[in-house]
Length: 487
Image 1 (cartoon, one colour):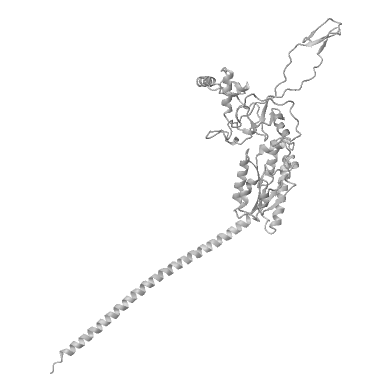
Image 2: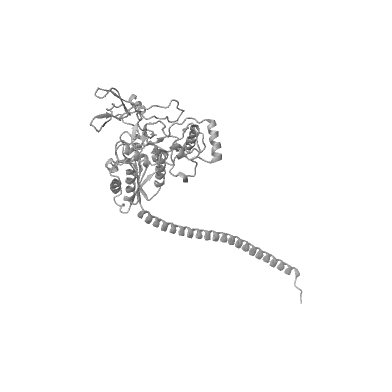
């Protein structure tokens, strides 16, 4: 038996080993490629899952937005409204409406509602069936009421209150808003109301009156040629409003087209002068109101002396007369009784804008201030009404002192202390016995108080123009009227 050659086996073994190595390399390459493909697959799968989740999220959001938009359109279409903003100090209702008081307020509301509805129907003929009309009249109620009364348009300032109440009750969305004294208050409220309504989609149109106050121009600058705006002209519109390119309308049956007659803000040339020119106090500090003395009455012709009839039918003169001569002789009688001075009518001073002013008080004495302070520290505060008016309605139930005897200098100190407190009525006060202050005695340019109680009066005109008497009558000061006669 022959033995095979070993070398042949070795060659074959090497061939098998090489084949195994090639197979292993192939497997290793396949595994590596599979890993790479798996990683890329996992990455793509992640991207796909993210895109799928994102798409579903945006689909849900789009669906929710569409639903919200549909609801909003439904709400918007069912809650549309039109706003009418009226600066009541500038756009004043017609005299015949104001003079009717309560009935005039209801009639003014009806006419304004009807007119605005017709205007809106002409602009939006297909969409106003359920639109609401909101009207706000913003004004200084008492200031305008007093001016209307002084012009004779209404008989009493309270008539404007009745007018405004009836105006607000005539329609559920009508308001007659009193902002008190100070033009900046009405302007600020109206400007902010405009800024509130202009961006609201449901607010389909805004009417604004009047268009002669340039202070409102900055509000409308960004809404040039806006078809949603209409200006209501009372007096002729200022040039700046016409340049805005906004429609301007006029409602002459509702609002006055001319200024109020002079007398509220400026005395007319034909006003009757006072019987005699007022007399000013000798020394007047800066920015204070002078004390105005009542005008002296014109002298009257002296009447015949009163007589009495005696029991025998003869007449004798009154005991207040001295008889010179004897009975039966022509005699001359002379009245030696002192004549009573005419009663002094109490009054308060007003400026040309019907705002109350304070009369001037002389400076206090330092020693009197010290005496008063010591007295108050030991006995308590004194009653303003008792010492300054001579009477106190509370009597023995008053919480303040009535028993102290004050010198005239100490009474002056008390007057200054009372004057330092602001009257709740401020410029509207017409109480001739009011001891409180109504304007800042220093004025805007000279007041150094950080929180002045009279800050709202810093821009008040402190020149006296008229007297307001306790019976409600008024009298223009001759010194004030003379300024216009010389102009």
